[in-house]
Image (cartoon, rainbow over all chains, first blue to last red; front, side, top):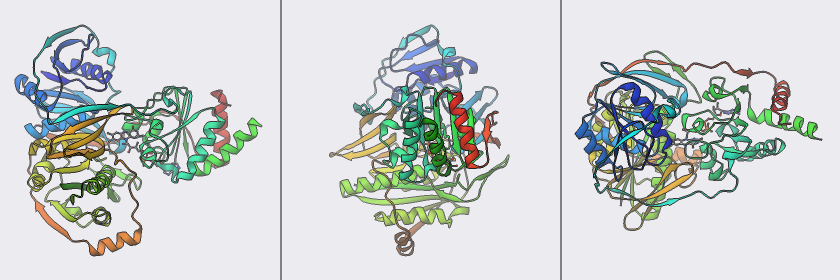
Length: 289
Length: 250
Ligand SMILES: Cc1cc2nc3c(=O)[nH]c(=O)nc-3n(C[C@H](O)[C@H](O)[C@H](O)COP(=O)(O)OP(=O)(O)OC[C@H]3O[C@@H](n4cnc5c(N)ncnc54)[C@H](O)[C@@H]3O)c2cc1C
């Protein structure tokens, strides 16, 4: 039996986990919020913390446990592995059931895949975007379980980010990564964005440096861009970044022709962004005038 | 307040790696970026609480004298760590359960331990979370800020830019994703001085063999067919302008 722990804060990935569980065998899905269209046996608990996870794990003795590579899954999965000592695989993009599990994990910033064979029982933290959430939808059979254990971690407040522009809705996003090198080069990206009637955004290191505000972060912890064009300048294409790139056309500029960002790009440009941008901007200016 | 911070080294992806079926061969190692954030946050927390900060490097035996480990510890010293330790794992392992069990005994005397939420070379566990399970400590990952008001208040990313504030019982392990301030830059002169002055207690530990995960092969992900433009910058700019035109951007 496969035990799925739904993602507390990002509901959609729960459906992806269910889609995967369906392929692996019998399964139960544990959630702490109302879901009225999960396919299969659903266990509704008041809250999802490690004590509830441990209790249900001991009760059902599953051969495999699935969590999402997302805020609550990343906390609960390793805790369970630490307590029980059972094997744990992260960044899973493919999983098959047999005498042992066969898992594929995407690692080294998206540059390497590793095929693994894993003994049962085991724990898998699954990346989003690899299983069709629609396959996880259907009719639930809900059982409520009164498992309300106090936790050593208690949520006291949820803080929403301050917005200046909503990059998720912009048609054209010019996004800068660490490859831009220096803060002053962001001006070039801003200029390009202006010429293309777009907005400027960035990867996590750019926001962490304070070079752009948090509202401009693209990726798992930031926004998902869904517009027409996403231009990635000096961005490697780590999993957590590309999770937030759902634009129709991705154009990437990178000095490394093996950069993972090229795997989601329509057009890839192998170049030094700081050499390319001034020339490109000049040409666009000429056209505009 | 007894604060601990863990620093590890990982292959430098900028220098590149060689992907062989049985192993990944790095050309060079660098401090793990998320641990650098954990260290920065630990320094911030020391400033906030006036606590004592001990920084612990964790490294495989074969890399015990690697420059990157020295650098990670020297950075910690230069930033104000009160003491430094280096835990040397007697055997290389990718399995974080094994690392957590090997080092657990050395993490019993802290109120708070900060560690990077993940390292770029991991595929078998997250060290901080597993260690918390082994020790029976609280755990929060995705940490972007830590405060103290007599108890621990931790800011954790919940996705989409939303942050949750959590009250966390100590002892606790915190998996840091980003420090609340940009990582402070340590000039080379100061780093060199730190390397000379710092005293590092070395501890060797046995890594247990827990089995259960077997690597079949490492390989590169397939590259889908895309239009890849290479060459002279002038030419590339012209081609990009054409691409922009085809998308009606200009
Ligand atoms: C829990 C968690 C959540 C995360 N959330 C996010 C998130 O929301 N968003 C996000 O972006 N990241 C997120 N990350 C971080 C993510 O893992 C990567 O570290 C990050 O995306 C890397 O940013 P980057 O591509 O700008 O930098 P790097 O990975 O350092 O890549 C820089 C790239 O620039 C290229 N380059 C260098 N010089 C040049 C040049 N002169 N011209 C052109 N190219 C050049 C290099 O070849 C490289 O590919 C998260 C990580 C964790 C653990």
